[in-house]
Image (cartoon, rainbow, N blue to C red; front, side, top):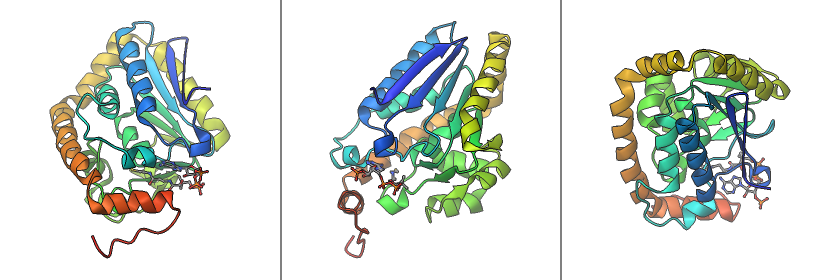
Length: 254
Ligand code: COA
């Protein structure tokens, strides 16, 4: 079965991360599928909302680390950037149901969702520094803005995870439910939205995001430059190799 499942029903496009044996880590092919699905949904008036979901035990372990190891210099047309541009500029409401770990882009993509429903087992983390990398998806701007600088520094500099309650308190998450109920709640809310006038939804979302559209796009591009450079540097190579070899990284020489 495909690593990304898409299903459209009653105006709701549901995008499911379906690579549970690899903890829903995201490959270039998966970014490409999600970018294509978002582009089609943006253009299709029959799609009124989008829901992202994973599994009750895992939302996503972030970017596939094997892909990071083999990464070639990427351009702004590469699948990950097409996906990030698609989700960050998507005009209609985007929801997510998040249970279990949401690592790296598994957390940063949520900054671009309008409504996030979390299982009480959700654990969010952005361990870019621990991997010799820097933030992506405009999270260097959106995390301090949403979480406050102090909590963002714990999350981005120390790479410390935060749980569903903290995410609720900072407004990243709209509601916490048992993991078995998160996907159904997201669907119900998506269907409520799909029944509303689409033009009003689009205009309301546009106005709510008006002040940050340009800064998000610029920050994403700046981060992408640094991220691309750092992927090839010794700290990141050591972190990725250590992960593949199931050992702790040794940064003493980098
Ligand atoms: N990329 C590639 N493979 C990954 C992966 C990733 N980001 N995350 C997990 N996997 C793979 C593991 O290599 C393992 O594969 P194997 O069964 O062939 O050995 C499988 O998924 C299960 O992972 P495991 O680590 O054993 O599961 P866990 O339940 O103990 O831990 C996580 C789950 C998510 C906490 C842990 O997998 C993890 O920390 N992953 C890396 C997260 C990360 O740093 N992502 C990059 C962010 S920028």
